[in-house]
Image (cartoon, rainbow, N blue to C red; front, side, top):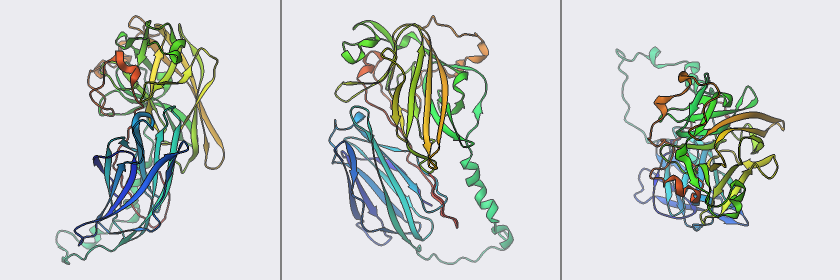
Length: 431
């Protein structure tokens, strides 16, 4: 088993400081692996020798950001994921490591032997281009220290009860691998965090779903056709005098903007490829805007650390527009609508499986822009009033600026930092 957890610390760009902690050593050895940005790519120099650890004792992994200065990467953030590849191991979602910050993780191996951990790091350049690096780290795990032998209490723990059959031991892993079901019924979402495009592999095919986290503390998977995204007048902002955004209207004019960073009272919409695993999908995912039907222009764009706007989708200059999304991505951007009214956005998503075949899906999304724009079939039962709260979604940062300043935001990527790896008789790679 590997347990991976993280905490904040001081630093700037990504050096991996692997800290082995043997039981009898007061000062743990620190091993540094430097990650740098060169020629628009992340470059890493892996360790030449395996790390060593005792079963049950921690191996600490410290991510230190010193080689990449602020302003080099979009949003000044790097993400890391660790995945065991030598057993039926569960991966972890990416851990965010900010510029001028860092994170510390801990690995704990339950069994001795040679373990291999795959480390993936990813970031975005200022123009939104994803950059990645990957390497494998071997860890030689020795037997744990001997504990005093205790005689079993035969009266309370007979031998037969202590010996569970292999099928019973493996049952939890099978249950964990099952895809969460898709909910039924139409809903209108107007606040909170939602990943509008979250592709998954189901029965060997690609299905694009909505990962609805608008109710704080819960996640519901939905079909896009069942969701109407409400963009209220709380999202109205003045369009800045920026040439890249002139297709949305005249500078100073009012548009509706779902911002790149979370704000109370308005939708915070992103996209996610975290459900697609490298064991199944090779290379990035292709995301295309194929058509827009609505009363005004639509645009999706990000804003860099120095205020430069990078347009991903522009409905006025010819479609389709295509964007490449790396695996393991969870990102947010600015969704802009030039005029109030009903919009229908058609998206296509495709990917290549590791066997070389292509999988794809096409879905339509409905956005109701402006307070006076009503649903197509009003029904009190389809609007989740209980989810319309002013509490920030639990997946995002606190203390976001007001909607009028949302155009100067950096790319937000999030992830968890806890994973459990179990070593079994049959080696199998999972991500």
